[in-house]
Length: 110
Image (cartoon, rainbow, N blue to C red; front, side, top):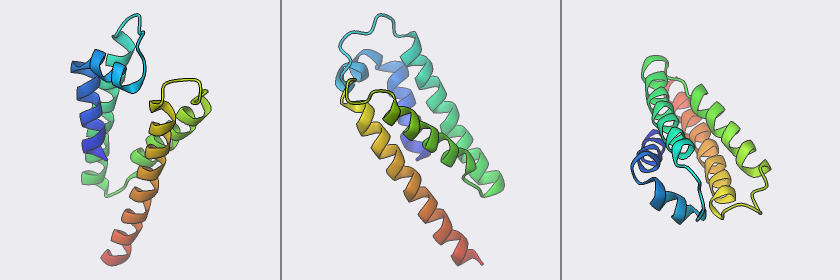
């Protein structure tokens, strides 16, 4: 999940126009906010890894993914680009997957 967030961040920072076009936004007046989103994705990826390495927990990942799911699926996804509902659904699947894998790993560790 951290690698996914990191790669999304890199793509938003350095291939902004291509990513936006691919995601379904053909008209974006200025790339500042998409690039800022890229920077935040990279920060989150680092946070995921640091939290897990230091504490062995995934709270930040769960909070970020839950927030993303709610935001993406409530923000008129069917009127926006195809990537909005797709991202909401895939973030939800990643969140559930992380929770299941983490719980399985914790059971084996005890």
